Every structure is written in C-alpha cells, then in structure tokens.
Image (cartoon, rainbow, N blue to C red; front, side):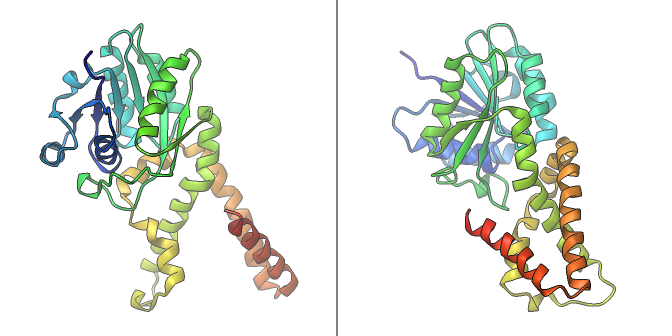
Length: 280
C-alpha cells in the first residue's frame, strides 16, 4: 500500500517547519512542495524536507494539501486548488485568520473532497525556509476550525499531521477563533508596531541603543514580516478594530489615572494586569 502524499503549498517558516518535523517521524507521508520562490523549493529538496518540488497543478493531485502562504494570498490559491481536488482528498491551511478562509475553502472545494481550516499557534519573528525549525510545533497548539459538512475522518487526518509534528490539537469554530486571536495575537502585533513607529517618528532623537529589556522584549514581534501582518489585520479587520477600540479605552483610563496622580487607581490597574499575566 502506497504512502499518503502530502502537498505543502508555501515552504516558508510554517510550511518548511512542518515538512522538517514530519521527516523526523516514523511512517511520515511522502511530501511534495510548491513555492513561488524557486529558491525555497530548491533548499527544501536539498535539505531533505520534501521528496519533490512541483507546480501548483501537480500539488493538487496529493491526498492532503496544506496551504502555508500569507492569508490574503491564500484565498485565491485555496479557490484554485479546491476546484482541482479529487474525491476523498483534503485541502487545509495554516492561516492566522479563519472565517473568510474557511468560507472560501468550503465554497470552492470539488465534490467528494473536503476543506478543513487550521492554525498552528507557533512562529517566530523570522520568515522564509531558512528560518524553518523541525521543533517549531513541539508542545504547541494547533487549532482546527471545522465547517458544516466536515467529516470526522477528514478532521482526524489533518489533526494527525499536526500531532506528528509535535502539536496538541484542539477545535474551535472559525468566528470564535478570529475573535480570540484578535486580542491575543493580532492586537499585540499591531501595538508593538505602533510603539516602535511612534519612537521612530519622534521629532526628538531617542537613541534606541539605550533601550533595556522592556522595550526590546515588548517590541520583538515588530520584527515580524510586514507583508504577512498587513494581510492578517486586513483580513480580520472587523475583530482587530473592535479589539483596538477596547484597548484604546483601557489605555485612556491609564492615561487619566496618571494625569490625576491617582496612586490607588494605578496600583489597582497594574495589579489586575500583573495577576492576569502571571496566570498565563
């Protein structure tokens, strides 16, 4: 009996790491890879991450196809691949926004095939195949976002891939996912970018060489790929704007406490934040 064939569309940090992680497991699938950057595909073959580099049409012939490209580019790619999938195959993704992607996937998937939305909660501020790490998903969480019509079999097939890569698999509906991650991922990135931008555009000179752990730790994620984060905040813009408005109200309250020299209020504000952070 032939091995199941996995196709990975996008061999950057996530796609490359998944391929490398699966290579370390017994009974791993045959892996084909596609990337619009020929250099990434070449490196993936040379480093043994994939068995074969192929084109977009060829990758649709795989048993499971995992789309690992920025979320705005993933929409047209998912629509094209979905129409080409064979009965019994599964198309899935690893995008950070889910509602719009799941909608596109379920609407475009060919009869007899299924689309399963997914999101591994793992990453770094680096990107590209050279940043790929076989341990990236170890002890991390991968979320599947089932849609109406998904079979248990398709969900288990996709979940098994992430488990083989070292992740713990949970399920969440797409809309809840986008609401939750607007607060715990998308807003923090936006705030980090905004803080660094505010310092970079000051009229007075602030030498960043003097920055200590606070600024460096808080803004590390502002070194993330700008194109990727442009896509994420635009695709999840409704939830991100709602989260930003809530954050603005909280920051306005902090500003007021400082202006009024309200020591009791400041201690209560900071203590609430500390207790919440300590519980993570």
